Image 1 (cartoon, rainbow, N blue to C red):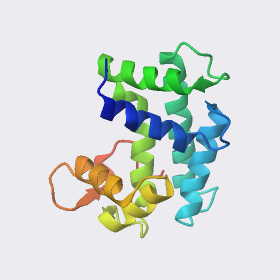
Image 2: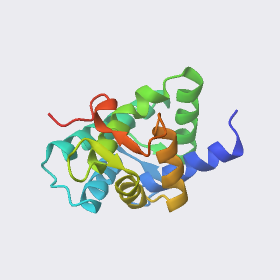
Image 3: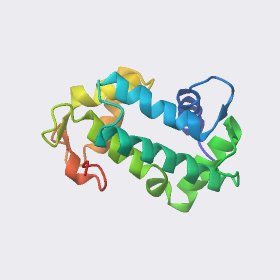
Image 4: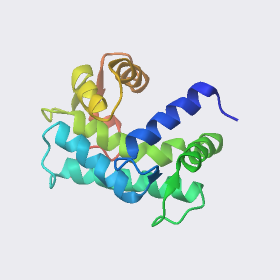
Amino acid sequence: MITDALRAEYEHRFSTYDTDGDGYLTAQDFTDRARVLTDAVGEPADSAKARALGAGMRHTFEQLAALAQVDATGRLNREQFVEAFTRAGELGSLGRVVGPSIAATVALADADGDGVVSREDFAVVHRAAGYSAAQAEEAFAALDRDGDGRLLVEAWPGAAPE
C-alpha cells in the first residue's frame, strides 16, 4: 500500500512519460522522453550524453515492464506503472530501476561539462520533464546528498559520458 501523495507522484510521472498521450507507456515513450530532455538543453541527439540518457530511459522501461510482468515490447497502463514503481520500492530496487536514467539526467544537466550541476541547470531539465519549479527544487534537494547546492556528475555511477 502506498500513500496518496506517492500515488499522485507516480501518476504524474506516468503522464509525463506518456509522450503520445495514448494512456499507455511503451519503450518508444521513454525514448521520446529522452529526446524531449536532450532537445530542451540543446544536446545533440548523437552525443554521448544523449545516448546515455536514451539507454537509461530504455533500462527504466524494461525494469518497470519486468516488475509489471509485461513483455519489454509491450505496454504499461497507468495502474501497471504505479504498481511496478510501488513494487520496486517495496523490494528495495528503485535505485536499480531508475538509477541509470537519473545518472544520465544529472550528466545531461551539466550544461558546461565541468562535472558540476547547478540548481539552475537541474531545474531546466526538470522543467522540460514536466515538473514544476517546486518539484524540481524538491528533487534537487533530495539528490544533493551533502547539501552544498550542487550535484557532482562523478557521484552518479554511469553518468559521465564515455
